[in-house]
Image 1 (cartoon, rainbow, N blue to C red):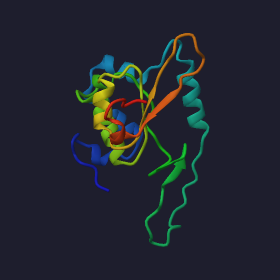
Image 2: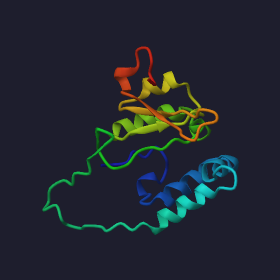
Image 3: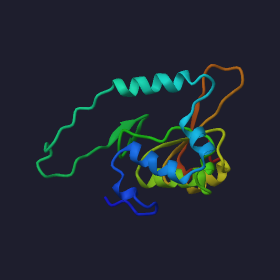
Length: 164
């Protein structure tokens, strides 16, 4: 797979930190602080970083016998191209004018699910219209301890209620 050179140096960014460095060079400092930060005292952010650092992946090199590796997985009763997804983050439009529309379009082309934040920078109708795979919307109800995710079936759910 080749990476389109829409951002200078992106095709040579081989780690998340390298991609983050490219973003930091292009975005206003306040936007970088918002993206890098967490809510309140950032306890959840800190716990997430600790958990991620504690996880270890065991690479399995040359195990496919020359065949293409299958990264597909079944999650929540659906088949996805990889065990990855896009988590809800607010206001993608701070980083790009197309915001969540560009995010769900790219995720759909990659065969990955997306959960969109209640605080999206684009309308849910616009986001659903750009979707090529099912999207979820994280809705936050005041006074509840849970944040349910409601799924849309992408293009087939656009007609009247894109997020139901």
